[in-house]
Amino acid sequence: MRQEKMTWVERLDALRNGRSVDRVPFLSFILGFCAKNVGYPVASVYSDPERSLLAQMLTREQYGYDSEPFYGYASFGGSEFGGEIKLPDGEYEQAPSHVRFAVEKEQDVDRLELPDVKNAGVLPSAMKFSQLQIANGIEPSVVVGGAFTIAGNICVVDTLCRWVIKKQGLVHRLLRLATDHILDIARFWVDRFGKGRVNIQIWEPLASNQIISPRHFEKLVLPYQVELHEKLLAIGIKHILCHICGEQNQNLPYWSDVPMGKFGIISIGKEIDITTAIKYFGDRYVIAGNIEPAILQTGTPGEIYELCRQAIEKGKHAPKGFALMQGCEVPVNTPPYNLYTMKKAVDDFGYY
Image 1 (cartoon, rainbow, N blue to C red):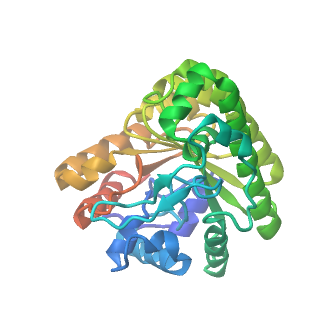
Image 2 (cartoon, rainbow, N blue to C red; image 1 turned 30 degrees about the vertical axis):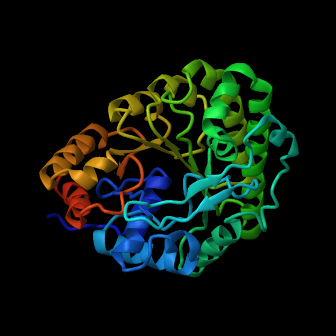
């Protein structure tokens, strides 16, 4: 194994700023696994910012990946707009899930109001986590959904999809609220920590073509997503990581119109080939992906090693950079050696 010439902090900073790195960075989309890894209940990674940060820092140290601790989950927006979520408590549960949606019928949409970002839902915990990041020498970050994903966390998803076809005025109302809510959060974080200091992650799984068509993505989702990113950059967000989750190949021509800022990171799932992502984004943004989480849990080390080798060889020379990363969150029951195998592949194939 070759000797690393950079610390993980130096490597991540170089990746985000267009400088050379010693090897392909290894980023990890990992939360609940970290809690279980250090003997905490999985729920604590969401309910206890101190434990969450510590579990993530210790797990990063153990497995040698290059990404910072972060706080967030895919159903964000549900409790903030008045719904109810449940923390994970079963053997295979790894993230909060919906118990009750804020919107279940048309009349509920009219009653919605923008949340108070200082007090709504998990935002106080997210702010506490960012303060802990600062105290530990880590740049503050905040995690949100994309506009359509937050709309689908406010409203029952099958109802939202029917409205996409039949009652688009209601969808526009939800997308407007979701977009404005994200911008309110960004302003709150920038006001607290300063312009050019806050990183944001935007997760957009519900806009996948398993849920809506590319035509509806173009007409409904894209205008809000473009507006959101333009305003985030104007507000003073330092860096955008956008997780384009699921089957979104037919959406990629539209995603390519969404600004990510200088050296933004596009994170992709297994459904999008790395060479395809480079075709659409590689001349402007870093590409990160795309190892399937299910295979991390159920596959053999040999299978994972080979998938990582292929991914590294496809992405290693992307014009603006590449990072090996899981295509979505690492399952809590992933065998520890399987996660280590990703780092082993980086060490064996990732050096420049």
